[in-house]
Length: 269
Ligand SMILES: C[S@@+](CC[C@H](N)C(=O)[O-])C[C@H]1O[C@@H](n2cnc3c(N)ncnc32)[C@H](O)[C@@H]1O
Image (cartoon, rainbow, N blue to C red; front, side, top):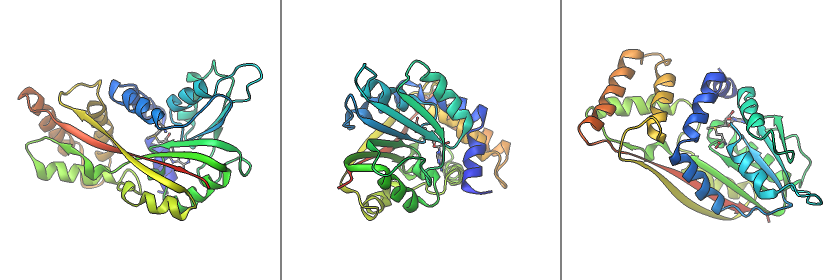
């Protein structure tokens, strides 16, 4: 299975809706607000949302670039997965300043030097040939434009449980959902090699001290379980035992989850 086939299988209709629900939890709403504070987006700008998913970032970008008469602000949003694009188009149906495209990050359907600002949250870790994808991103940016990337290193995950060996095994399985589960640690060099400058790095921790399905970790538990139970040598029993272990920590008052998001902000010279 190619990486794009694996992405499309993860983001079928059910997978896209599950991710949308997680991305609407207060944890991820707050994370999006923190990310937007680092983004220099103004009315009238041409913005690009790469791997827009359910369109939550596209909507925020659309509101920031505006659609006043005489204001040429516009958002182009791309994604490879049709179910994601359907959710995104529905979310932004009242925003005429957004256009959605089904496209691969390796071949952006835009002219050279078209955008003032671009953002890709949790996307490049899904792309095997990141270096080619970053070069393609730099191509479509105007000189001086801002680029903001967000990715996760799943080795930054701390999740309280009783059976640590099973937790490690589960995380190894989950690491297979993307080609680059530890992308942040090499992303500065990759961005610089692609020609970006002034790269700044920020961390945004996600912290849950209680178990609830309306949190990032509560939602991700189902996502991880669904992916890992389909892997050879794992199977539903191991996954069910892992879920029971982690949720039982809550009954004992010891639920603990934390994970770092890494935000990279840079500029095209
Ligand atoms: C974890 S979701 C993040 C969605 C969105 N950026 C957000 O933060 O709300 C990853 C998204 O990247 C998209 N994606 C993965 N590989 C891609 C590729 N090669 N080209 C375009 N989109 C891709 C997926 O379809 C999915 O919608």
